[in-house]
Image 1 (cartoon, helix red, strand yellow):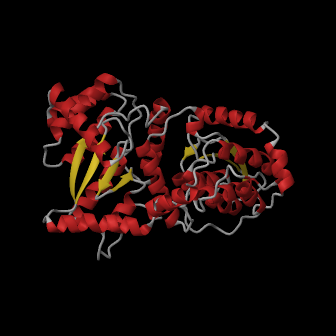
Image 2 (cartoon, one colour):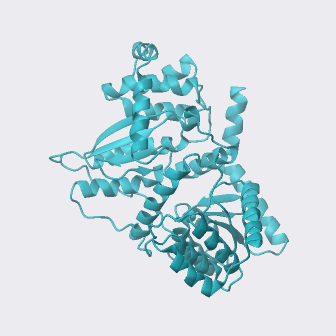
Image 3 (cartoon, one colour):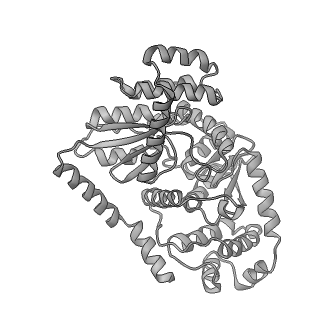
Length: 438
């Protein structure tokens, strides 16, 4: 069974299968004489929409891409089990993105049900305007403003509003379309079999659309680039708290990269492990698992990190791994073991519930069998994991990988390592990096 599982995951994440799917869509489009068409799923109170849509609009103009806009409601509870935290963090993160990309600021309002319903009805009417993307951006900004009633009055004057029944029907239709295509969040773009969330993944879509275009790309690639030579030891070393779990594919990408970042800036890297969401009673629907797996593959490939031959370590495998990690950290081998474990589970398809699998991961991190045996007999890692979870929640976060530099705001996702670099530079009094030029 393990061999079959490894074969399935390897095939599912392979470039060959991806290219075959793309070719099938491309051939079907050409045979049908259809234009390249993408779908964007728009939620009026999602702050990531006004950040992504300007780049989507630019791609439609440059590459002849047609766009279908779909209104969608807030995600289902199973897909966003910590919805209040997601909304709070999303506002802060989207504003940070807008600042970094020099876009118009996102409002800091917290719209209730009534303004959201008004915004949905206005957006439903605006779908049929000549410039619907601009209308969606304006309506989202109005909904998210500190004075949404007055701002939405202006939007209603411009675009009108659809009746409640027709608006509700469009929301149901948009949600059904998104589910049928295989996603669960808003501010996502779908093109011929693949999803691209927010502004962060649009550069992958643009790479598919560019063809022979040799002009400068439209979409940003937000990432740290060439790191500076290791700095002389600062008087006070900045601290990076790295929250991780052993069932998160994205954590593999973060673990493979964060060591170099910490070294370059002379930072003290602290590993703070937590149990995976599913082992904390939080659901992870199938569509979410699939998207995360395929998205991790393209992110890992971009950074030259092996990924895709998977043996899910959930349950006993994670528990055994965290027990060893708890003992590896005081020896200064925590990051080495974390990388080794995650590679074994997500790149090599090794069963981490087995002694041979765990011992192999430990040995290549410099941890001997005696330490592994002592770790497995010591349940104290459980209290540490729970304390780390409490710390993570206190930061307003719930998922991993997440990061905090000193006492600055924390960031969630391996695609925020560039923001960790910005915080490190700030802590050391170094010049900020212009992220519109990276």
